[in-house]
Image (cartoon, rainbow, N blue to C red; front, side):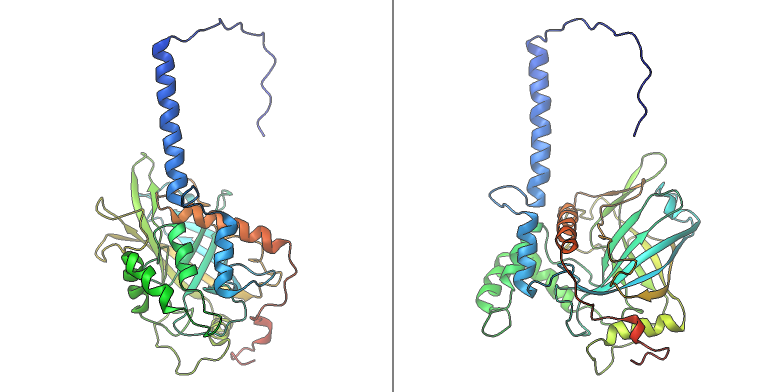
Amino acid sequence: MMAEPPDRPATRVPFFTPGPRVLMRLALIGAVLAILCSAFAWTAGWLPPRRLTQTGMIDALRAVDGRHRGFRSNHAKGVCVTGWFEGNGQASRLSTASVLRAGRSPVVGRFALAGGMPFQADAPAKVRSMALRIMPPDGQEWRMGLNDIPVFVARTAQEFHDLLLATRPDPTTGKPDPARVGPFMATHPNTARAAAQVAKRSITSGFADDTYRSLDAFRFIDADGVVVPVRWAMVPLAPVQAPAARIEANTLFDGLIAALRQGPLQWRLMISIGTVSDPTSDPTVAWPADRDQVDAGTLTLNRAESEDNGPCTGITYDPTILPVGIAASDDPILPARSSAYMRSFVIRSGETKPPSAVSPASIGPGGQP
């Protein structure tokens, strides 16, 4: 809170009556601000006729995977991890963010599987996520939610909401109804194209040797105010291996926990620099692979803990919580993610949560229960 200013003699301000030109100018400024605010809400999918609320998005997620009290509405099955990020200073020319300077920042993170089912069985092709809260010494934060897919499957919150409803399981078969999925894909070619890319992605053996991407675009701002569009990825230092022939209920999580018992796991933070031709408002489109990249530092994780009162339990990995020098782009998915994450947090905070499916304490040094 700012301190109150010292007492000073009151200054008499002469009464001012604006003339017609001033009134016209003020009206024009107000109209422009209204258009900008409306455009922001429209692209995020919050205004009629595409009215979508926080509750509406949560309800759509539950239509697919049901309601599970006390758990996150998406990426419900997960485990907490801790470690640090070691910036190497190479990205400091692009951004003033202190986390990108040479130095170490503590990290509280979480690995999870996509979907709202906290007790789902692990599967090789299930989308995996890495969520991070990086805390540099200056008190700022960099939160990120990364996924191991090349692109996102929707351009807007409304489109993602409609996709969830189109692909929700049929009560009779337990699988998506082709009568709903077919027409949706036919009228949303960008989603069909993105889904095909996701389906063709390479599958690794587990969390430790996987690459996780921001999907959304952001902006780096340097000391001179120069802005460049960026996306980033955490690229593993562990050798990539093929998935196991047989997957048990918790194979992926048990493998991660066992690997951390053997020693730290590391990833390189690779920043991709976009050009004027690269879209920043459409996460369904991948940027060309030949874009300039900067190695910004190394993420090291050395401990796994249950999310039952673990260090990641109360954290929303809102990707719009950013340090000075990094800003959100015009990607409409970003404000929608932020809003939905907060609503999910409020809901689960008032519910009693049963024990999670993943328990690091139950895994021995050799990875065996």
